[in-house]
Image 1 (cartoon, rainbow, N blue to C red):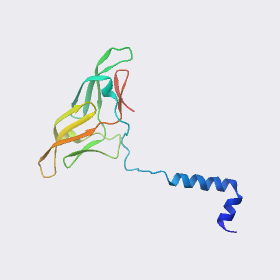
Image 2: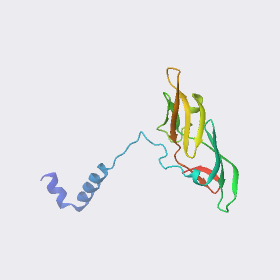
Image 3: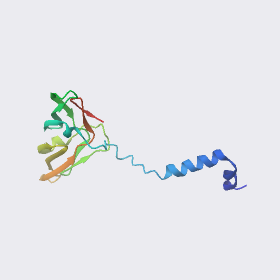
Image 4: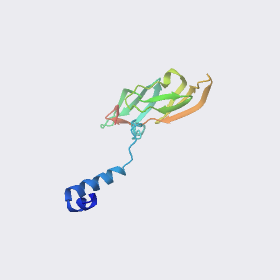
Length: 142
């Protein structure tokens, strides 16, 4: 008896085969594990600044007051020959600050001038900071 004939006579095998076919169509990209949610902290925080890989801000609490001292380490960003990029490890410490200068932030966009492998600087590189939100006045990762 052929496999298809056996499959059609067994509801469990048919269900298993159907689930396998559905799962095979779902794209999986294990090399990209960085947070993918857009950051939302910029919507309820002010005086947003960055020093190296540390993001600081004053963030609104649920009672309307501001927490004047919250900060978080930006994770997973590195300098790739003058261009800011995400690593494949979402929890990795960012390393861009060691080879970039004039680091700044505008909303959720990190900007910098980063050294290329030839020693020159790329004067215009930026990346969206992902996965950070305001949790009652405290910056956190989602």
